[in-house]
Amino acid sequence: MLDQALDEIKTSPNLPALQDLRVKYLGKKGLVTEQLKGLGSLEPEARKLAGQEINKLKTVINDAIDAKKAELELNALNEKLEKESLDVTLPGRHYSPGGLHLLTQVINKLSDVFRSMGYDVEVGPELEDEWHNFDALNTPGWHPARDLQDTFWTTDGRVMRTHTSPMQVRYMETHKPPFKIVVPGKVYRNEALDATHEAQFHQLEALVVGERVTLADLKGAINQMAIALMGKGTKTRLQPSYFPFVEPGAEFAIWWTHPRTGKEEWLELGGCGMVHPNVFKAVGYENVTGFAFGFGIERLAMVSYGIPDIRYFYQSDMRVLEQFRGVL
View 1 (cartoon, helix red, strand yellow):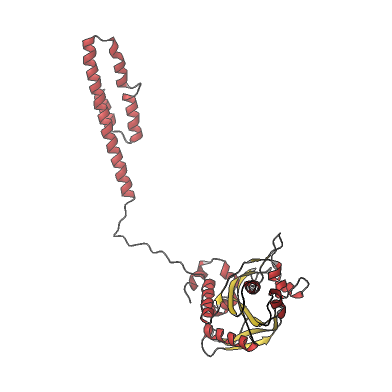
View 2 (view 1 turned 45 degrees about the horizontal axis):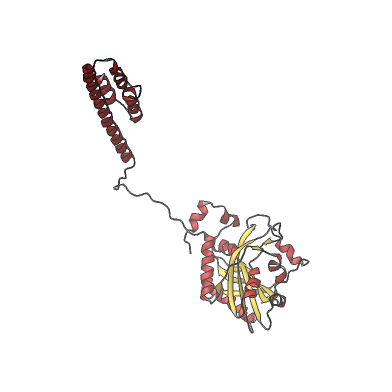
């Protein structure tokens, strides 16, 4: 039995098989244990000698099993270490670094430009109430200008803001003039999607309020912004237009050279004007004047970098994103 047991233990391939052998020989119904049960039928002297031999057999088998177990565990550990080993002489794997989205880069650049001009950068909620988004900006429910800003409403009567202008009202409710702020952020409108229209896009709003702020100050601020963005010698123009929250109102454009085509042309950026008296009335301001202007950030980025479709900004296409990693 001993030779058979030692041979089986020696050739045991793994720990589960070795455990089966322990049960086979040393378990409650094992072959060695069964021999111990038969000692009672022997004479005392023979029982003593037989018991010593069986205990010796049990000890040899148990020691052999323990030794084999240690060997199998060591082999398993070595195999695991070999699989998990790291060859430090191998060249490292190159992972492409991430980068800021082009729109984020443009927003950061615009924020830096306006900070250098003395403006504070503010942010506001994208989910607005009707009063801040429309009524306080001189656009009551019956006003036809609301048709130009069809948007998304929640069941509790709130609205996904259609422009960043509600922050004009929110800021004036909690601050006293004079001040200069800009508000970059995401806005929403119920648009038919095409190459130049998206249901969500970004705007940057500017508001300056104080004593004796004039249209000349507005023109000067736009000139200063254009020079900071496009360089010295950049020309700007104002063209009369209507917006319900300014009076008078205008659209502003800059004369620039397209960086890809080299073509010179007027680039319309957005709307501007002197803050309407009704807006000041809504926040309780008296004896002050101010101006505001705002423009679409996607439009500026599309024209500046030759992007033909506004939807490219939101499709997460790596072919587009990798082109504009760190362009500014």
